[in-house]
Image (cartoon, rainbow, N blue to C red):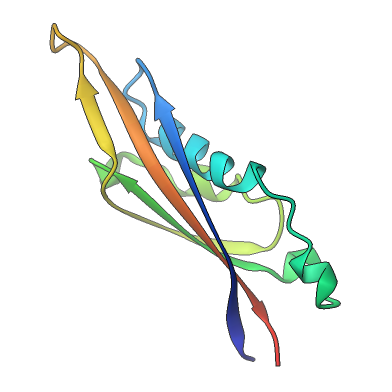
Amino acid sequence: MTMKRMVLEIGMGTDIRGTDYTKAAVRALRDALWHNSLNIADALGQDTDAMVVEVLIGVPKPELVDKQAVLAVLPHGTGTVEVVEGGLEIFNDAGTGSTVIANAAAIVRLDVA
């Protein structure tokens, strides 16, 4: 099996008032995926579920992201999720809430000769 990187998709997601890191991460991955209609698997004579997707999420507090909820966004294939420190958290003037900004990268691989 030779897994080759075929596609890199990037996206950004936010939770404006709820400080929900998972919501921002899910939105970032959706942003990355939903702007594309990939035909790469079909073009190579493979099923779309043959895709292996590595998801990388960047947020200020990685431990607050539910990886399974992020992984559930993938419409095809199998995947893994790694959450690292990144993104932004912008506090309101009162310091009582914040906006969370997450960045996502989805690396799509297929087994090709």
